[in-house]
Amino acid sequence: MGPRPPDRTEVRMSDSRPRRNRRRDDEAPRPTVNPRRIAFDAIRAVTADNAYANIVLPRMINETGHTGRDAGLITELTYGTLRSLGTLEAILAAASGRDVRELQQDLLDALCLGAYQLLYMRIPAHAAVATTVSLVKAAVSPRVSGLANAVLRKVAAKDLDQWCEELATGDRLHDLSLRHAHPEWIAREFEAVLGPDELAPALAADNVAPPVHLCAKPGRITKGDLSRETRGGLHGQYSPYAVYLPGGDPGRVKSVATGLAHVQDEGSQLVAVALAEAPLEGPDAAWIDLCAGPGGKTGLLGALAAQRGAHLDAVEVQPHRAELVAKAAKGLPVTVHTGDGRLFGEPGTADRVLVDAPCSGLGALRRRPEARWRKQRSDLDALVPLQRELLAAGLRLARTGGLVAYVTCSPVLDETSEAVESVLKAGGAELVRPDWLLDRVPDSARGDFVQLWPHRHGTDAMFMALLRKTGNR
Image (tube, rainbow, N blue to C red):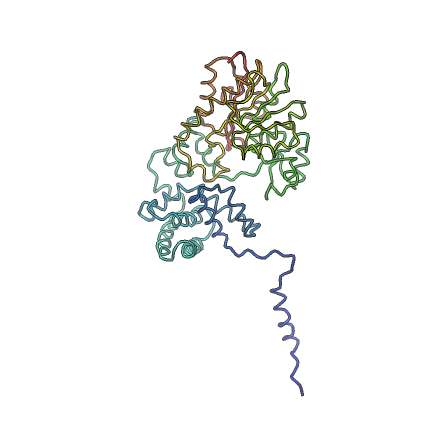
């Protein structure tokens, strides 16, 4: 008599185990790198190598195969930690009883990552501490894991409001800067423009991750078609070409990949269109974008120029940025020049000139999480003279009666109204009210200037002044 065959239960069990572990050939393998480790590595790239989070993080996520909720968690951990570094370090210093600058940088980065989870996210304290200590053991050194555990447990003993109250000095600017994670000098610059009542909302808005704004190039795709392609992308509130991407990688949107649309903040769209829509007497065929990189405004102005029978010369001093401009303007009546805008062109030949001057970028802090901690007030010392020279060059290029738009992604007075007023003192130009923009965007006027804000308009804090050339310069 041979061996007894297995009964039905045994057969079912032996067959089911392989099926449960079997992966279909068309399924992607599950990522093996822990999301917190990816966030830590991205933070290390920023703090140790001066990388930009918005460049290194998407690549890291793609290379490790994370999608959906895991990709969202990695992004929140990385951007949130970098955005809040100053506040996190102040709390860690109080919790540890030491100057955190004395710690090795990789340990401090891990502690900031753990503290962010404890103070800003709905992650249970025990989980945030345990996962951070494990990260320290694996990525820093087992010898300092005990220190990490002790410090994070002290951080976990209070919530963010309690820590901010404990560290408050009674100085309003210091306390608001601590609570909203901004260097105090930036808060002071914002207050000089907004006044004290709006400072807290403006700082808070910088800590809210914005949606990606797309621009539907006029004459190539309508805003409605782009909205339908993005499966529910909302129409922009103010720009006739803006669509808010509901989520995902904009590079995966076919119209973006093929150049029918591009990524561009709605505020950036508005100031470009305001120049194009401003009334102009006489010829309107020669346009110049004097500081064109990376090309968002060039692409929009080029598309508008195509509809008007105009031609746009785009000037960019950095060769790699000039290549980006050429890509953004492909197929449009745009000629890209690599060179210094201050030395470009023949005087008195342009009908419309855009001077999108290099600036501190303080108007886009919500999109660049690490930027606020890298910048110093002294950085403006080199930028302000350059900005004024470029505006003077734009006016030199404009014909009499021609228009020049001076634009910065910064609200700082030195870079905005004071720069314009300084150049106007030389004569030969007058300020023009950009009615197209001011009439459609409430609370955007700063006298006859335009000043947009994240907390008011949901855009970057773009500044614009429109000038008309009245004589020789």
